[in-house]
Image 1 (cartoon, rainbow, N blue to C red):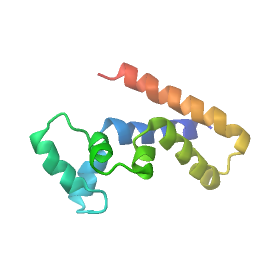
Image 2: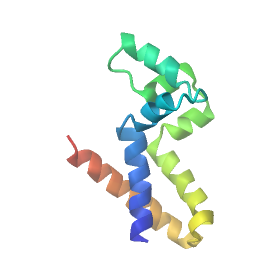
Image 3: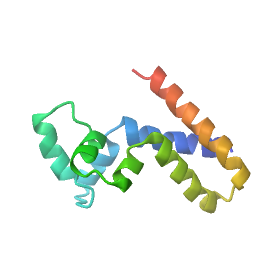
Image 4: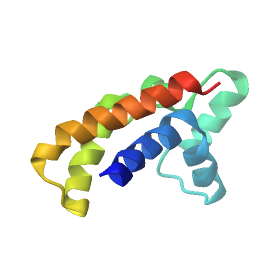
Length: 110
């Protein structure tokens, strides 16, 4: 279970704390995620993040889902339940612990 906890924390860190998704999407020329539009908008506003851009320009239920750590973590864990086969009783423990790890990382990182 430790591996699963750190996997979900790792996914949250990569998604919310890095530009990895933007960089790889741009490098691989994937056009589905509005990355090119974001990069153009970021040229005039250096404080703009990918998540805030999505919320401002493409606000929808799905966008709000992927820009909220609590929501995204919950749905990742539900999807992972079917991949990794842990029980429904483990979901609350995995959810809370992975969020704790993620937020501790945020407090400790510069």
